[in-house]
Structure formats: structure tokens, C-alpha cells
Image (cartoon, rainbow, N blue to C red; front, side, top):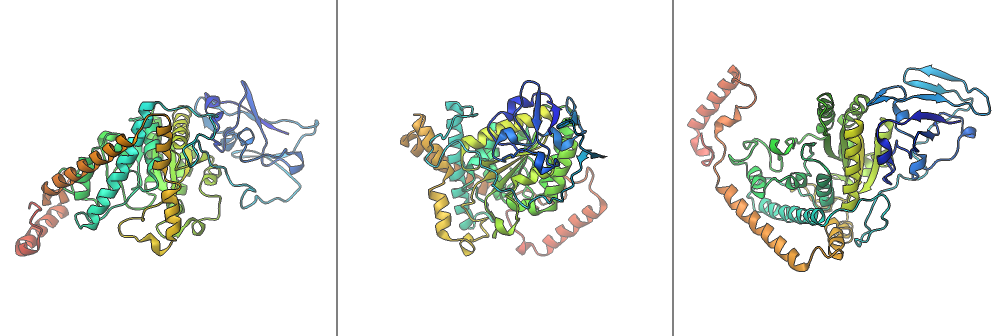
Length: 479
């Protein structure tokens, strides 16, 4: 027996892409049939998580909920003229079965990982992939190299004591740049703290990065945040916030506001595997699913939540399966494969915007660098493991091989790019260091339209303290 439902809007074009979005299926010109998980086992055909044609269709996840463009119709189709008894319960009809059955704790096979290029930069298949142009490919590679050099220079600056803190994106350059390239400029980004490449792609300058890290008066945050807590209204990039996973429910809310305003854009939020252990992750996904908000959740599963390995985080098959539990179409992608990430986010964005639905993407990309400059990852993971991912599975090296094979890159261009980026960064750091710090007044502004009485008292008290102990106050901060 099968449940049948009428297709909604333009879903056909997207789910036929070979991305393995869980909760989707292949559609013909009129209807799609799929097997219900509540049908007695003897009446079910065998399905595979790795076969997109057998995946449970997204309309079933909401049953009778109102969808953009119409209501998903469903009914029980009789099998051998015998009516199957069921319960008409809020949320949809549930079939009865005389057999006690528990859902397994995990599927027999792990959800497959979508990729386009192998470790040597060779395409493994052309199925369902839209080739990128030379212009886009060269820009993506150039930005990946720029991000790599920027991380090296700022990391060195922190070790020299010139800035207080830094976080690198080493090993995750592909997720940064490829996802940014697949988005539109009016899409709103709520980052975690390892996505400076998204800002870089959107035009944030090296000088602007330096100003934030040095906390001078040109910093848009006015020196109130730690280094790497970037933000830019001009680039639709929310300011980084240190607390883990708080951006996830916020992203769902922002996406719902875009839907209410009928904006042709979506929200994209990034988080690590450790963030999925926070309650905010579950609240955010559930809200987005129920309200059908156009948001793309991108989980950077890099294997380590600081020093906690993923096997100590959860027993599920990674993060991708958690989306389906909340009724969210989900997929898993090789986070070290630029073309795979680009294609995945491009399709995910299109589905989110045109169908008004959330999408969950789990990108697998090992964190090669330390968690931050306050961390020494060799204390909790073997050095040879780190070196393997750095040398053998380097996303920058892999994409360079593909770009060079197409005749779009050379050793000369590589040398010139790295030299120029490093020179620009050194100059940006010198300018940022010499730029005056924000005035003390900025500690008390931008919260209320008019300062409250307690803030006024605190400012007066601080100024009196500075006056009494002027020798202990930094000379480069204007009073």
C-alpha cells in the first residue's frame, strides 16, 4: 500500500539533483508515490537511504500542514481491496499494526556523503552537477588562498602579542568560500566564528578585518568585541557572538520575518558539531520546520568540539539525520570538496527561497588548526592524524589541482597571489595598530536611545576612577 500526494510548486527540478536530500523523492509529471514508515513490514518494499528515488517525500513530514502554494493532499490507497485501519490523529492519519515495532537506533547504512572531486581533484561523476565558469572558479580559489594567508598572518600576530586572540579556518576553507559563492548578496548570514571567508567573498577588505582584530576606532564594533567577532550591516552579516548555537534560533526568526515580508531571499546560519548538543539547535530547527522558514542550516562537522570528539557528542549518524526527525530536508556533503559544497548550497538555497522551507546541510571537514590560539590540539589528538588531513585531504590543494587541470591557474599566479596578499595584510596590520582606539564614551552608547540614569552614573564613576589612577589606564584610549 502506498500513500500518494500531489506535488507542490517547483520541487521537481531540485529533488532530481543527485544530492541525496533526505525528505525528498523523484517526481514524475503528476504525482509521487512513497512508502509510509507506519505500514506493516510485510506490505512494505525495501528502501535505501542512499537511493533518492526511495526517500520519504517532504510533504509527508507535515501531513496536512499548509504549504506555500497549496495543501499536501494524501490518502490511504487500498491494497488488495482490504481497508487498513488507522487513527485519525492531529497531524495526520496513522495506520495501525498488530506487530510491536521499535524504530532502530540507527540505519543499517550511514547516510552517504555527496562529492564531485576526488582527493586528487578529479571529477568522479558529472551527474547532476552544474559546471562553474572560469571566472567563478578562479575567484573561489583566490579567496581560499587569501583566507589561508590571512589566517597565517593573524595567527602570527597573536603569537607576537599584537592581538589578544584568533581563530583559524584551516581545513574548512572550502565550506567558507564555496557556500558564500552559492549565495546571493541579499541573503542574510548568521555566522558562528569560523566563517570569515563568507565576509571575504562579499567584499570585506583586509583592512576591515585588521581593524576589528585590533579593536581600533575604525572597527564597526567600536572595540567592544574580542578579535574575529566580525560583523557588517553592509554585507548582511550579523556580528559574531561567542555563546555557542545562539545564532540558530535567531536565524529561524530572521528567516520567518523574510517570509512575512515576502522577500526573495533566505537566511544562512553556520555552526559546528558541538553546537548541535545545545538546546538552541533543536529549538531553532523545530521552529523553522513548523513555521516553514526559508533558512539553510549549515553544520561544519569538523570532528572536534574543541577537545570533545564527535563520538562523545552523539550516537546518531552525525547531524544529517537530526534534520529529518524535525521534518527538515537534509543532506551530507564533503566539506573539503569546493564544487560539491557549491552545488549543494546553490540547490539548498533555491529550495529554501522558492519553496519556503528550511534545509539542513552537514558538511564533513576536519578541523586541521587548533580550536583557537588558546588551544593546543596535540594534547587530545594525534599529530599524524592532523598531518594526514592537512596534506592528503587539503581542500585548497584539491581545488587547485582541478583549476590547474582546466588551464586556469599556474605556479606564477600562485606565487604572485600569496605574495601580494601577505604584503597587503602586513600593511593593514601596521595601519590598524597606529589607528586610535575608540573613546571611553563608546562603552556606554548604542544600547539605549538616551542613556539611562544608571549608565550615566557608571560612566561618571569610571571617569573618576581613571582620574585617580591615571598611571594604570592605557594611554592609547581617549578619555
